[in-house]
Length: 90
Image 1 (cartoon, rainbow, N blue to C red):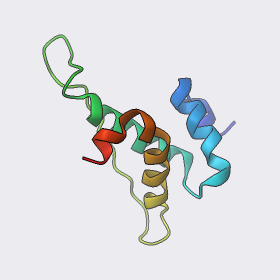
Image 2 (spheres, rainbow, N blue to C red):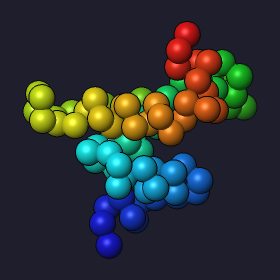
Image 3 (tube, rainbow, N blue to C red):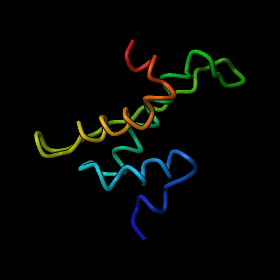
Image 4 (tube, rainbow, N blue to C red):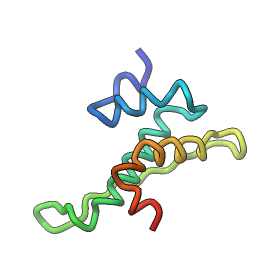
């Protein structure tokens, strides 16, 4: 079992897994980018009990030009585009 398979959860995990055959990105990078994009999109509306925004901060780190960071962000954007496209393109 891969690391991604152990952490994959819910509809987002299923969507990332479905996107992997057509992406050069690492699935964990796509997972991290997806969580950050989605949390940023909902942070003004969803808050904890003490009124703090629900935000996930991630870092995509890798060697320049071959780390597949851009592919991870692009794949995450494609996956979430229909649900948070207005946020992404604002």
